[in-house]
Length: 104
Image (cartoon, rainbow, N blue to C red; front, side):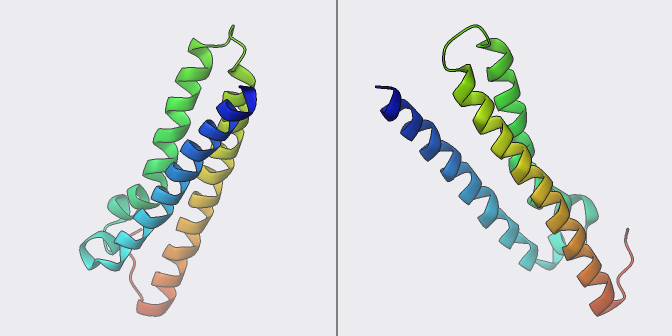
């Protein structure tokens, strides 16, 4: 039963991470790409929401047995959030270098 529960949690985490990766493609739209706040939201919005939800679940269920699984998911989500922030900074630098755009 524990293996099935771990596979279920892993599938949910994988789905959310894939969704957050595809949301980055919204930066192809010029209205989003040219706005700093919208661009930051497309890069970091979904991972940030996932981290907040997992922190809430962890502190709510800290006394239960599945808190170890949630803590692992939280660690991977924080790593994903940090990677998204670094990717956003790299993206904005490349936009500035290519077009001289300075809305920062």
